[in-house]
Length: 435
Image (cartoon, rainbow, N blue to C red; front, side, top):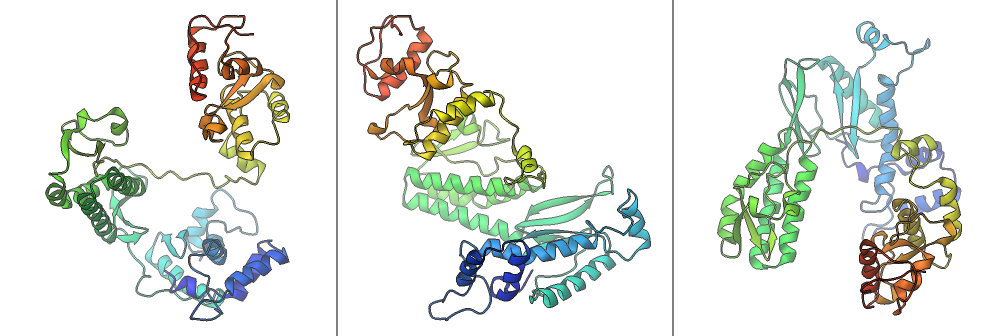
């Protein structure tokens, strides 16, 4: 852990790093420099450090430590010998060279370097201390930085307690076992206990929703811990008496099997006989309703700004021909908002270029995007409030008179009446006709 990282970043070094990354717009650099040197009330103009809470602070901190990431990577992972990196070079280098075998995992100023042996870990420790001091002008926090043998002791990282435990079937005989760290357990108990007290003092739906949000947040963050179920069982048991004493007069207790299907989908592994508290017609989520989820890595080539990276995010859509989609975009009304036009294009693809009511395939010039709930009735430009229809059905949607040729099916009538009701028009009855 780096000691007072955000308060000790060297401004001159940071500006040089930004320049070396290829950001050389002097107007932008001038703005960044002014943000760094912005006067702090009561303290004056800072000579070092990045403003915590500023919109640029996380980005600038990553720029500073990007140099550390690549330096450690070049020590082993991306090291390239003169003759090229052959298939067996890593095994050869591990036995016959002085290269340090290690991999870095970093989040902001908190990082771990994973090594195979104690001597390599010691070498990395002293090398990183020297690099941070001489190259970046930063110091480590001695009380938070140490070499740990994960086979004997655990190490805390981002709220998780990591330890290597023996497992005979694994490739190297050990696997990582992760738990919520003691600090995270204590914080989770205190947070949920406070939410329960707030429900007792202010019994309303909003407070119950806040409690459920807190439970969901804890479950989603710590679900990648291998022992998350047992950890949250400990949290649940610690809150058992508080929940019973504070809420028994305000809540109705039901069995999990009696709850709605939508509620059941939010949890995993809960038995039907489990007691669930219901307050103001809202069920309180069970704390233990989560199982371990493997933390799979994503492709490092994913990027919004390169063609190769975009292909990793999604493939080209095949619902509508690209030429047809481009033609449809040309017929959009430029007076509409950007959000509306973007959502109309997305909806055209989602409907496979077909009319919402008739289901017939549309030509670009005959297709139009409309709001389900019109703008004059406070309808939004959201994706969910937009459908694509044929221009021929617009009069049937908006007019009170439904005297047209060509019959509509019952299914088409249901969709038509949905749009008419949103416009406060009477639903069409009997046989309707379409021009």
